[in-house]
Amino acid sequence: MTCEPSRTATAPIGQAAAAFLASERIAVTGVSRSSQNHSGNPIYRPLRDRSYPVFAINPDTDTVEGDPSFDSLASIPGDVHAVAIATNPKRTETTLHECISLGINHVWMHHGPSTSSVSPTAVTLGRNHDLISIDGGCPLMSGPTAGTGHTCIRAVRTLVGRIPGHIEDTPRA
Image (cartoon, rainbow, N blue to C red; front, side):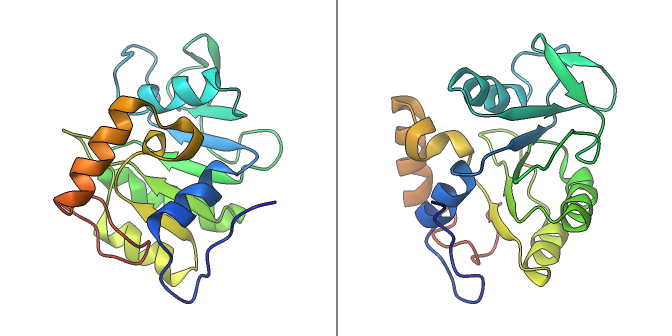
C-alpha cells in the first residue's frame, strides 16, 4: 500500500517522504564513479544497503559503487517509480522533463549541507505536471532510512526553515 499525498492540496513533508520511500524502484541521479562522497553516492549507497531496489544514473560510466550504472532514466529496464536528484541544479530541469515523459511521479531534489539540486524552474515544472516533488532535504532524513545523524540534521534544518514543511512550499536557499 502506498501513502499517496493529494496533488491538489499541500501535503506534509512526512507524507510525501513516506510515499517516495514506499516506491518500488528508485533511481538516483548524480552518482559518481570516482567520489564516494559525491551527493548521489551517500544517497544511493544506504538505499542499496537497506535493500531498496535502487538504480544509479551516471551517463559517463557503466559502473558505480560496484553496481551497473545507467546513462538515463529511460535506459533502466522496467519502470522507475521515484527519482532522487543529486546533480547540479542546471541538470535538474532536464531530469524533470525525463520524469514527466516516463510517467515518474515521485521526485526528490536533494539539498545537502553544501550542495543543492533544487532548481526553482524545476520545482515549478514539477508542480505544473502534478509530480509529487520534494524540493529540499534528503531521502535519508525520513522514515526507515533515517539514522540518528540524519534525524538530528532534519530537526535542525526544519527548525530554521531549510526543509519545506509541505511539498508545495517554495524551495529553501
